[in-house]
Image (cartoon, rainbow, N blue to C red; front, side):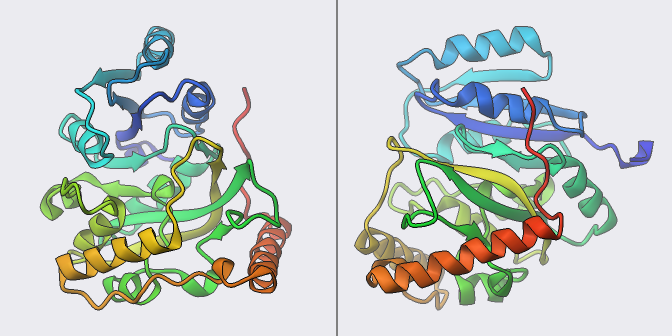
Length: 281
């Protein structure tokens, strides 16, 4: 990548009792082929040894810094805390248990540098961990026929943007008013994309850049809870966001059809070389 294509990126990770998977996540960032970044971790007052791990990594790599805040229990608060301390032109979000592919940042930085009117760019994710192709949690996102690039698409398709694949322009996040800290919202990332796309369209790279981890400690909201959250967001924004619907909740046959589609998409993308390399420890 030419020297003028080398802007600073802020990688932002919120944590809370994340010690089980945090090292792998941090390694997947530090092993990026794009190296001009700062890594900000905001801890929501963990009670495990998360801080010990973060201290270890700040000693090991000067790009890593962490902050601890009073426990909020709401992702928007540590995200905004980190955003207010970000120095990068671009901001990348990452869950504390997910893994990036090695080329994630370099390919996305190149895209945004070449497409200055795009407010953000995102890629694809595939689930791994406590999941298999027969699980209701198995998925590849977004499916090719549900790629959202505009505000209209986000309303039509719902939130098909995997948050941990996003690289966004910090100046647009600021204009959009950061994450909404409304404790009733629960869909902070979706709301942020809706606000950001008031200023321009989103970019999409059809490559799998993220392994999204499924594990037993994750919150798993019911179909009813997710539907209520969508209704609340629609009411809050005044947008005609459709009801939350899931094929996986309609019986085994529907689940099998759904998962077969997702698995075939993964196989096709693998065959075409669109699954980036994973990090190496």
